[in-house]
Amino acid sequence: MSVNPYPLGLRLAGRRVVVVGGGTVATRRVPALLDAGADVLLVSPELTPALRAHVDAGRLHWEPRRFVPADLNGAWLVHVAVDDRAAAAAVSAVAAERRIFCVRADDRFAASAWTPAVTRHGPVTVAVLGGGDPHRSRATRDAVRALLDGPDSPLRPTATAAGTRRRVGQVALVGAGPGDPELITLRGWRLLAEADVVVADRLVPGLLLDELHPDVELVDASKIPYGPSRAQEEINRILVDRASAGAFVVRLKGGDPYVFGRGGEELLACTAAGVPVTVVPGVTSSIAVPALAGIPVTHRGVAHEFTVVSGHLAPDHPESRVNWPALAALRGTLVILMGLKNLPAITATLLAHGRDPATPAAVVQEGTTSAQRAIHSTLAGVAADAEAAGLRPPAVVVLGDVVAALPRP
Image 1 (tube, rainbow, N blue to C red):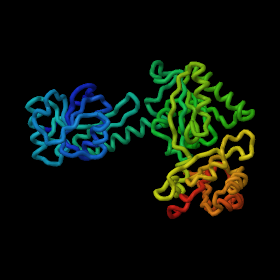
Image 2 (cartoon, one colour):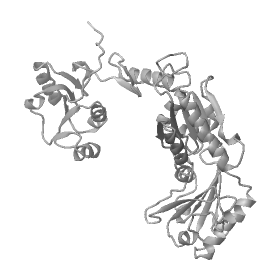
Image 3 (cartoon, rainbow, N blue to C red):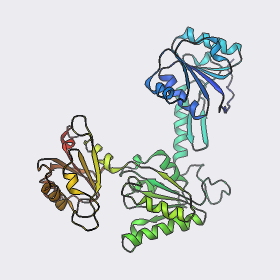
Image 4 (cartoon, rainbow, N blue to C red):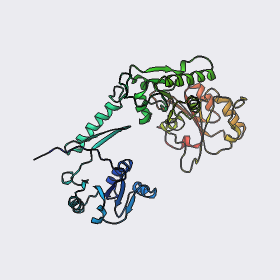
């Protein structure tokens, strides 16, 4: 007779869990056990490099040999992650004698416990058992995860759900990535779904804003009046005021908050006002945009360094803090953000200080999006070529031999 399993959440912190086997299955299972705080004993003659890294870091204990019954002394749970059915059966027999639950990768129906398909959302863990069918478990898990990640997630705190909001009076500085809405980090996406207020930059992917819950207050930071400094002061004031009033505020910034994003200034303003801040790094356009245009910023035998600079000020501007003559002497990759307007002056300065005029160059406009355009040129000609092509910001300029290292996509 078929019976349903009894679902249970195991609190394994400080408790011994034995994993028998050091292959790919164990590689997948061990991180969740470590995340649960388990005292993991790994028994296997050989390990994958990923498991060896856990051993080297002191996160678990490894016995480099085959299983012996004494390995289960003091154990609360055992995972058998080997393909040898006879060896797996021997381990599960010892576990049964000692009344220790046993998970078997080789034969789930011979096991006394199953591992569910899991999705995690902060403190919420959803585990799905599919009646012994792992494909059904994963498909159901994925459907639940899509619901929980979406704008109508039941986990999203609302103003009417008193006591359910997990973050009250806080600010999160979230990097939205370089333009493709799918390149925001999973943590950034989840925090965005919880926001009461979103203060968004001009370069934030519009589709992310389209997914916001209708009751979220959206502040378009690109439309705040005054000059750059006054606008930043107003943004700081909005973050502090909304959070001080009890809202969870997400400051959504294109790329990464700390790569020419003035995220540090916003953190200082919030900290000075006593507002807690969470920082969520983002995928920076300085690396992602060249990559999706077929340009690696480093490449073996070509470039062992890359430098990212802001070109929003011309090289001769009194407030520029970039040492352009020193950059001209480098042999690696130079990535210039916000430099399209000043590209003629930048290239002239680099040429004047000795950079080879034939250095490969590229400009990528609106990288990672469906509107992406790119031109390839040389240091001597890239400014004129970009103008002739009608390229406009946002654009990333790449100078160096890496531009020609790979076939063009």
